[in-house]
Image 1 (tube, helix red, strand yellow):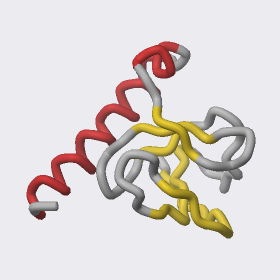
Image 2 (tube, rainbow, N blue to C red):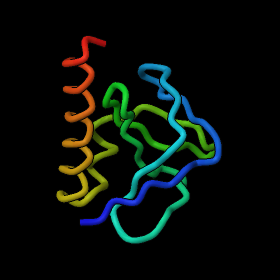
Image 3 (tube, rainbow, N blue to C red):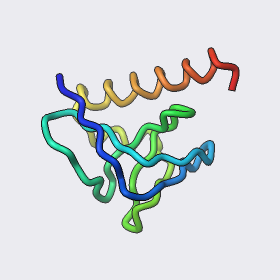
Length: 92
């Protein structure tokens, strides 16, 4: 599995912790530009967010994840847990 990191060229703010994000990571071989409803897991707090039509982030609910195939859903949840666990270990 290949992960590709792409600079956004701007910052977006996590609605859960207010941390700014300026990169996205995708699975595959190509750089991507986030589109409406694409997911972003906050590296700071682990919150699962989605891009809005304006390019900002909104928090997600369980229904948002229902649209994904099980492999994608599991990967997003695991990424969220890794970020949340890291933050807890660092005491933030």
